Length: 297
Image (cartoon, rainbow, N blue to C red; front, top):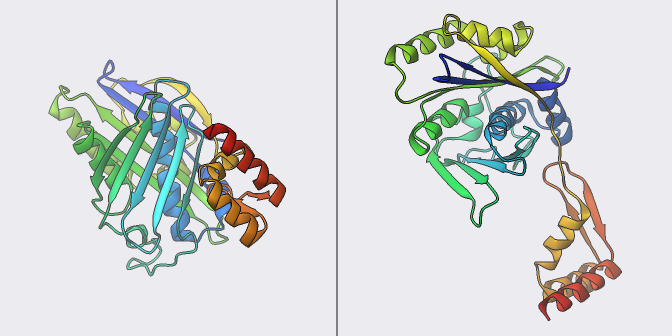
């Protein structure tokens, strides 16, 4: 089944909600990176949140990138989404293994760490991107995104993210939700939402046991007049190509390109997001040197 995001509203626009089922998307990411269960759970949460942030964007060509670095053994996690919610991402150490203090529960916080920050970069087609950041709260990802929204964007938000991995290491369920309320909304509404979320329990179980995002939305927003606005099909898609890597090589400068020719007799570059490799022969590099010289002149 394809991954999807549902966008909805309640209380005449005072509440907006995004619910994502990213099970197939996270499975695809796991297969690409051959990641350990805890790395899959951590990256899956980041991919889900970043995909939702993507569909929040207004322009078709807008993009958003999230970076989480908590100085834990997993290293840095990066995910990028476009306005359609299609996302890609990677972790520095995808094979990380961390002991769990709770039986049957992956220690995502221990793998990520919390001595760092979450950074959100919005490319809105302007001269400079918007960059916001906030210190990590727990390394559990959902709480960290909620804190970012509250203190960096002054937007009260409930964020739930989860990934459940089966005994055969396939993704049993993955997804999450982001619920945001307008600042002037009655405090009692926030209390009701908090209680509903507590009653709903584990996010991954909620997704596993529900037919679709509508069912989850009605469960979380019962009595608040929820309304479905739109539903998106999303996927893990890497848009890398040879031209981008050529530009990256040209940016190294002619001296560095000549060193690659003399010392390595070529170059091999690999995309972090999809692991695809691009080969550049000596002749390819010579042509790039010529292009760099012509550009400078």
